[in-house]
Image (cartoon, rainbow, N blue to C red; front, top):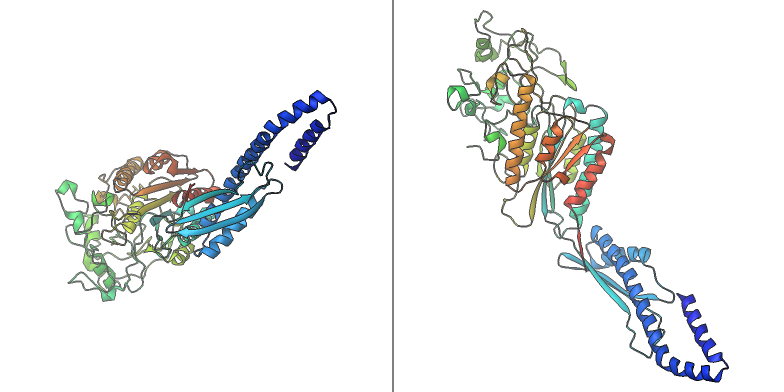
Length: 523
């Protein structure tokens, strides 16, 4: 820029130095008229050029200050100035004469001025070049459920990567909360690990010895729990899921066995398993079933179900020593009324994000895949309705409810049909297959079971989105048809992430964090 000015001055001097009389007169007249205008145009050009550079630099600095955790104007000013100095390009002889970054309500408002050299100082008044920018810093309050696949196929590098990247995601959301107008309540997170079931409560103080079998209640036993599975016996016979002829109090069985309830539950009956309407153990035989842990009292029973529904065998005195663990998908199960319930328990919706991170560290991979069970409890975690009822009302303004669902495979309800397992399945959060909790019963193939579970998942996703729940879905290293199901489950195709290699899971989480906490820049 300085070279341009020197060249312009030299050109003017050359005109004056021309010895030709006619040329001198013409040039003098022309110079007197056009030179100030030319210099003024040059001033306008340089001013416009510097304004664009200043605006770009101020925009970047305002976003930087808004994304920082600064909450006072002096701290915001320091953050903004640091980025302004790094990005601002000044023309020769120009200097930054003013800058300001401050909070105005929920916005970070910024301004800056640059003083420019003047070619035609007497032609018009030369004011500093000034620009402004602001960023809407206040996010809506966020209620987020992390619904994470902890099935056996996640064992090894997958679960390790999931733990690492999930904790980084929580850190990013925590940083976003720090720049909110209400950082203590801006971000609340629930953690819902899932496999074939969900562990809705840890086993602390859930001793069966404190259970009152008459009142069907006890200390720390949720009031919404249905220990007898009464809901499974409603409706016409063909629609009943639990065909036991006697009521089976699961918690009473655990009390008889001096065993704590570990916190896992069966799915609700349809359609309550695909919505968030508020709510108004383990049989076994002496065959080589996976969860055979007690001696039958009726060894000569004609019907194998008679052995399963016989509750007297659970009384003290009929208990065998529990067998050793047996190998299952991704880990080892210890047979008993809590078989498979070794998942990390749910962490209910909380603004204690360090607590969430600690629980993420404790996640382990075991069991098969029941995506609907994980998703519905993710929904329960952020809804205002029972059984958890920790979320804000759906109608509350400036509050977003978000589910981030991650899985590495398709729904599975093991098809175990042989002479050693007349139940035709293992016992999971869906009970036994013959209980028809999926609408299909004994004889259903693996494909038919998966199709039924996929149907429940699709309906569940639709119902959650009707309540304005934002759903992000992530599929890791799976090329099956579940990708279409998860893409349709997401709130939009852009909110579905198909991660081909678990090593890039963090990229998906970063994109989701950016989408959730996006700041809006205005001039």
